[in-house]
Image (cartoon, rainbow, N blue to C red):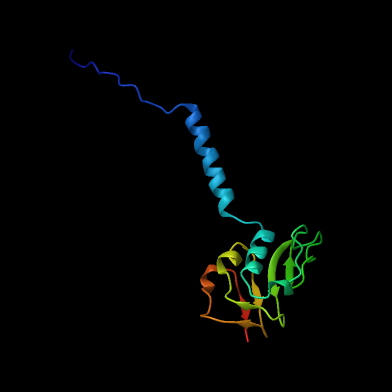
Length: 135
């Protein structure tokens, strides 16, 4: 027939496909990010002499006030980890930049008078970092 068009139905995945897809996507998003507590504890675990840092995993690093800190050496601003001041603690090893990269508001790190070794860490992993102090 002239001018007749054949209709080809479009196959759509079942609605359960979409549900499974978005559930998987959500899990991937959640599994890739650490909480600030988890990131700091991962950083601490990577160090030599981690017992020098008395962080309590059952307490969040930042307190209820906008600049309150619950953990020694953690500087908070607006309820987020803004800086680390872990000086004169006998810490050593290499700095776990992957753990620190999970702290999106980290601006300052001071690790003076410790025993770190190895090459300078990849600071590009901390895009908001404005100051880092070693000696």
